[in-house]
Image (cartoon, rainbow, N blue to C red):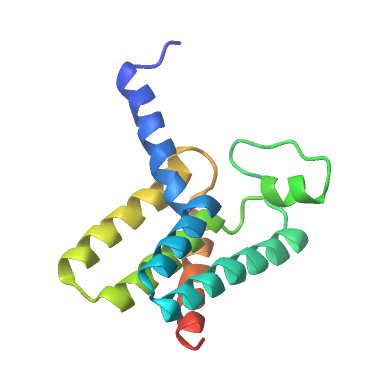
Length: 152
């Protein structure tokens, strides 16, 4: 059955939105903040990057949960990538947004970033990369990461 045209547009929109929880976005955000000279925020973002990755890999090593659209895997790295719980994109965007909100402290920016993070989180479910429990786990990991990053 042919899909309606608007669904194809939604697929593209959510595919693009989900990149804001990606490794590449987090890396370029760190470089941008570094260029602005906010070194403490850089350290917090670096901690968030490595901590969310480490915890996710450890969890996925011992608890494998298939993605809604299963991915084949033949080695350790592929298996970690094919696992669904917790959502690393969600953990990253939650940690990033909370760190930025703590740094910027502006009501308009808060509303925008919270709304945008909800779109990123929803995109993971829409694109069938995660179930709701996966993104809930990612949100918890992101919040824990934020509080630990405040101690860095």
